[in-house]
Image (cartoon, rainbow, N blue to C red):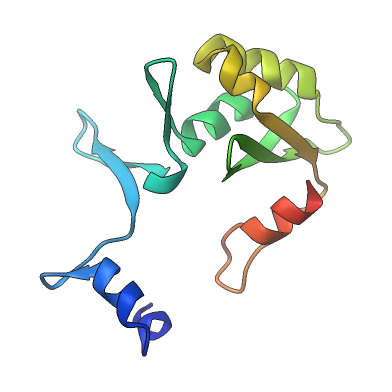
Length: 137
């Protein structure tokens, strides 16, 4: 992980502080003692007085019947959603927006750009390829 910071003093100073690596992610400890990652701090927003995180939007969408898996990539004021349907199914973007509106508010639902995908593009590390998802939007 640290190889990416070699010869990059600004990035190194931002992420390595007092012997600790700072990921830039927000998280919370649950009542069960488990750490719950909320997403990149830069991608979390307060909307209408409520904290809206990429993972919360993803979780909401994945409870919609047509969505098997969802990835939320924040791009300015929009939230680009890579949505994978269940086998032989199709993404119902309107139902997804309605679910997000009910749980996170109309402003968050209006910010969604839903991109149905057959396969999720991944980086070499196996993480969702944010650049490819944004390019698909």
